[in-house]
Image (cartoon, rainbow, N blue to C red; front, side, top):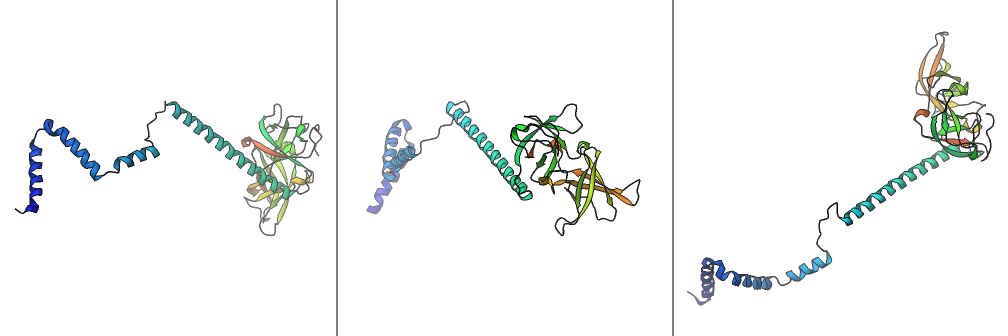
Length: 287
């Protein structure tokens, strides 16, 4: 055996002897030797572990009953609800800005002010379909003012004798508005050809008018206001849409168009009134 091989042979023999000795005799010694060997082979490990724990303390699991966790959850829910409320407010402000821009483009005179009005319950002892608006003359609302939605959709008109805090909305399609002069738009995007008609309420919130059978009126066409008895700022706004065209029973050579209002006040929570009066005015007669 070469001299250089003797240390290796001795180490192997010692390992064999140690492996068969009882643990109670050599356990402590081997643990000490293991610690020394670990320190020699990996000296910075312990130091680095201490640094890691100092920079990033170990996480301790916290249950839902932990006071700190409850407070964190409460703050999270509070800020989340505030964020949703702020987002909804921003969307509502953007909607009002868009509506104001549309109204301003349609009527740049500025002889009006916009008043938001919540739609309440049906007015007692009144015609079917008339609803209460939670605003009145204190904000300049006057009888005959128009109520609109989304810029140019007519919802109806304010009824007679509004009081300071409330008023009545007579919706499009209600017999209380009488006959309404309007135009059926044949070609909205092109030359803008329009057919003048006179609308009358036929029940169920719908309107009807006489048309020529060969006049080009078809379902889906818009119907816009052109009635001199209505405020100037309402002219050209959308009253509804043609939903049916048929032949009149009494006059077979004439046609009958059925118009569905653009807005159903039964499903409406708020309207915008183009108020023409001054704040604090009392109700006046409809124009």
